[in-house]
Image 1 (cartoon, rainbow, N blue to C red):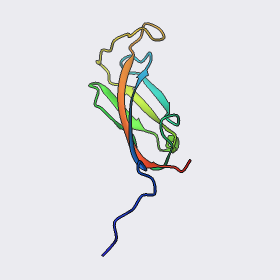
Image 2 (tube, rainbow, N blue to C red):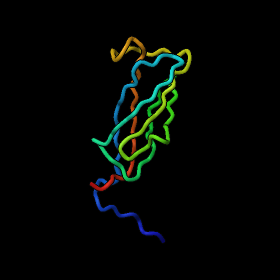
Image 3 (spheres, helix red, strand yellow):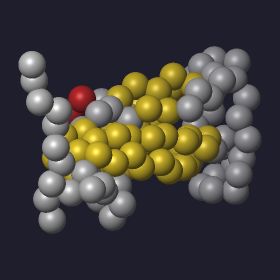
Image 4 (cartoon, one colour):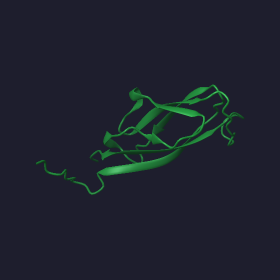
Length: 108
């Protein structure tokens, strides 16, 4: 029988959650969101980020952008989807994305 894992740090397994805004994407357009979460957590082993669903958006995690301190995703706004201008950038649509990522913290 295998012994359970024992962490040397009490908070080694961590989840971070944040909101980020994708600026100026209208229907039919695609953009890239780059997230640096190293100020909140740097993971030695991390899962892919999980996003709350936003109707009309397709979110794809880019494997070449996954690091312990951040990630990159491609966001595509489906044709016929209307967004809102939240006052960032130009008068195009801005999108609020809520995400979470879990992982084992890297040693300091």
